[in-house]
Image 1: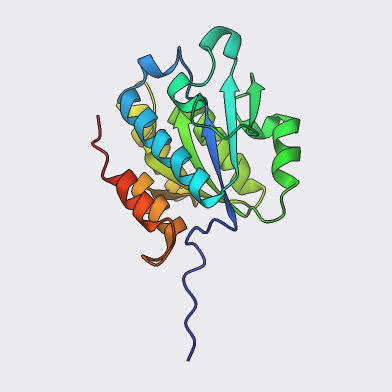
Image 2: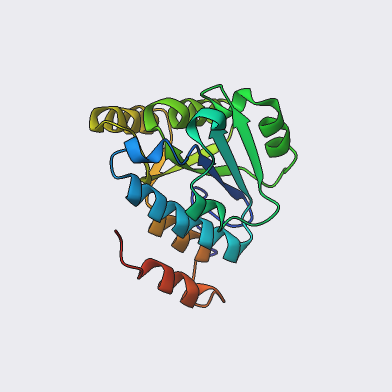
Length: 193
């Protein structure tokens, strides 16, 4: 008898990371903004190890600034950054075209701010397009706890998988025999802020 792992587990071969609006002038207003940036950093370091595609959005960067420098400096050189004024990234034609260009991407890991606005609307639209969404709840926040909590409830009841940064990293790793296991183990042992 053969065993196949659960189809909802993430794999570097079929997933991508979407960093939503973790920007210089927005993060200071976010509850636990330092934790969002810290976990985003962990995931960016992880995707670079596994070769997972990464996309970045910036909401009105002229007013809210660019992606946090700490994260921007970690991004691979060829990462596409999509500027937007819409709340859902799916309303940015260039983003959708780039995403659809990769037939391998079936699952998206979402992180960012704010949970109840841009993250929620993007996640719901991506699910409508047939993508499986995994939300790193520890790398996503809003200014107020109620907005964050209700966004998570709505996303979960809509079919989004709520998870954590560490769980995502180990799903991409899959086994202690993975050549990146030691590096992932070092990543998750970093002291949180």
